Length: 213
Ligand code: B16
Ligand code: MG
Image (tube, rainbow, N blue to C red; front, side, top):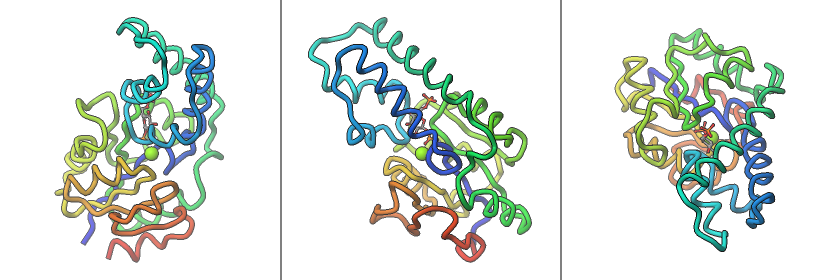
């Protein structure tokens, strides 16, 4: 049975995915690089610098590492301006109910996110001290689809991977969870992912305590 549930952050707990899009779009427009929502889907769960590399596939010149760092920094500054507007009301439907039920059933709850802005986001939505463990982009070498961030989250809550369920909205995250020998419940964009153990539109349509039995 499941003893810990590890939640992805962007796109699962809160819809910062659209803020990522708007910030990258502003950066790309300024540099005259083509970027749209279809390309944006490939950035889900992927680290900041890997995201930039995907965007630069459409650029018609090479950029130096220094230029790339400044582009990523520009995007992150815009992104953090948007994050500043986040409040607890932005927590997605069904999330708080699922978290409260898991807590009531003595299931460990953790965050496994590629984002280096995880502490800031959790603070803005009032969940800084809520989880039993938080593993994020500041602590890992390899981002999703590598399982590193989920394995770290499991370690922090002292549960073996086989007894963890990951909740993800990104194909890269579903792949990462399975690579880490964990079960995975896919929501949102990843709810079409054939490899996920469970698929739902969002957490409001899931009876999480039934799944973890
Ligand atoms: P940052 P998750 C991921 O978060 C996002 O899905 C992805 O689009 C983003 O590039 C990545 O975090 C890094 O974010 O620039 O804030 O470090 O879905 O793993 O919670
Ligand atoms: Mg995500």
